[in-house]
Image 1 (tube, helix red, strand yellow):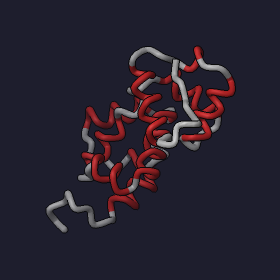
Image 2 (image 1 turned 30 degrees about the vertical axis):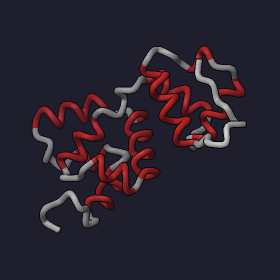
Image 3 (image 1 turned 120 degrees about the horizontal axis):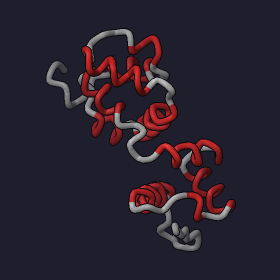
Amino acid sequence: MLSLSFSDKRWSPIATIFQWCRDWTEGVDLEGCGENEVDHIAKDIGLSTWQLRRLAKLGPEAADLLPRRMLALDLDSNEVSRVEPRAYQDLQRVCSMCDCHRRCERDFARDPAIPAWKDYCPNAGTLMALNKLPWAARSEW
């Protein structure tokens, strides 16, 4: 079970998120956590309790389409996550909770450049805004 030490002077929300993700991928789920623990985790990562529970049920692969979409746009997901960590976290959350995964996968199978994804992707606005920035990983800048 995930243990949070609020008395540890080196505790940070980011460290808690990473530890929770490591524990989660090793088979620990929120069902083993008490309500207070779930509330603390959700608050630390800026989610509501129901969002955190839904994300936990979806599993760690729920946002796997995001790096593919970013690659199709020539956005380096590592750079975006480093430079804009909150925006990247939000992109992951929104992608994970999206109801259009099958449609997105079909579009990738056909042609990732087809602009139809902008009509159904809840991350389209953020991705298009990020796409206009001069990222270091792009050779064009």
